[in-house]
Length: 174
Image (cartoon, rainbow, N blue to C red; front, side, top):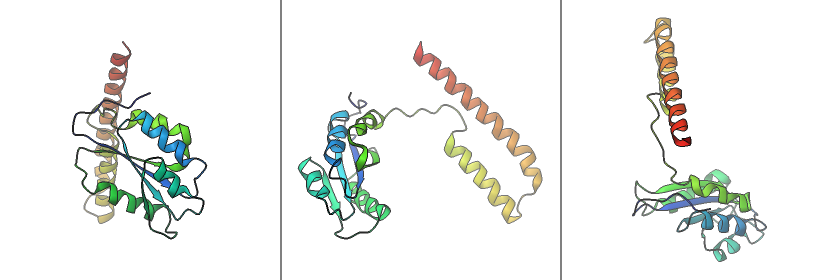
């Protein structure tokens, strides 16, 4: 199974969280590399004591290790900083865990999979709309009347988006 074809100049980059994953890190890196040829893999090693960092290096990954236990979030942040060095806005990133082993290969086709705009009210649009309503209500800038008209409008836009997604899925299946 190979990853999605990418336009030239687009790089695929994986950042893999790992702490004492010596028994699975090589399989994880190998599965990512096989599923997405040319992918650049960074391993965020959180002070593993079982040789995870050395095995990741031997498997072809770049290892970011800060030498002592910092926690998953801090180490992923450090590895992402390293991965972003020289990256462009068109590069595609995948974040995953080092214990996926061969199952990491299933992620390959998702790196850079086509993203479609299926309608006017996707997940981030809904989050922004509900967040704005909450801020307006909490600040007193809008009253309950806002909810009375905004929620039906948001529901209609969500239905429109769902219909477009179903149409797209049916067209792909035909």
